[in-house]
Image (cartoon, rainbow, N blue to C red; front, side):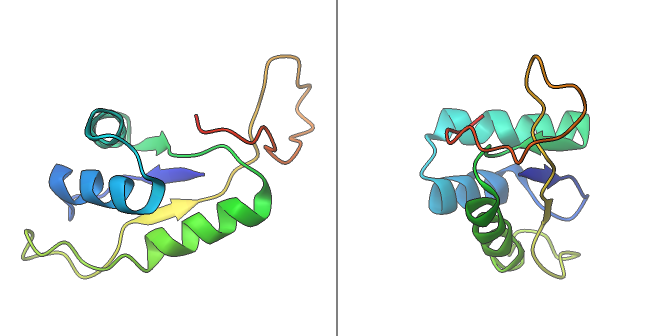
Length: 100
């Protein structure tokens, strides 16, 4: 599952969301916030499709960032097939089971 960047959410928001929804440490949550800010996207979780859909929906429902006046709602997250070494572009389902 991939979190997409926008200009309407603070690092604090992303860190709080990652801690709340994924149980990540402050350090891991900060690394995700930094990656989404600098690269425009960050993998939050690699898991089976149903779990990824649940987590995506939780991100989409997390709500607006109260620290940003221009924020109108939640961040965006998408589900993409995971690619692992040895994959030949068939895209599996990303069912590794752990977090990335």
